[in-house]
Image (cartoon, rainbow, N blue to C red; front, side):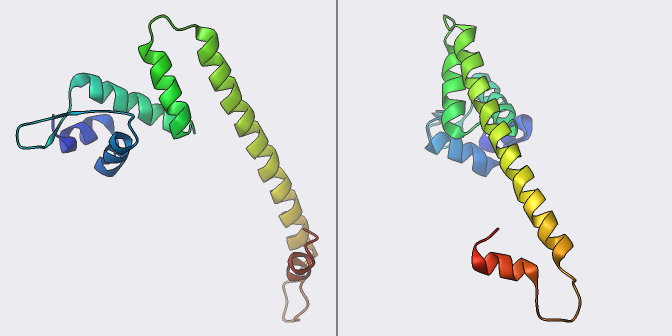
Length: 130
């Protein structure tokens, strides 16, 4: 398969596929003319990577997940540990976003939003009291 075909079948943009090759997540073959030549196994890896990235796994986490997937002697505990770590990161980000939302909501509520120049949002940002 060429890159446009594997892009269509995997649902990933060609640019993303090239990036995954650049960072060593996939290694497609090359035809005599130098064009990338993708096998079904490459397509499967790309679909796997697309699903993992859609869950927010980083490139390094994807590299580890792919290595675990390809290791038939793996322990599911290793996969679970990686996923649990990612879940903890997501929970931390949700907590940070929740706090950001609470703070900004309070500031928006305090601002009259009228024609006067005084604004508690700008004052808070200027004082570093956010």
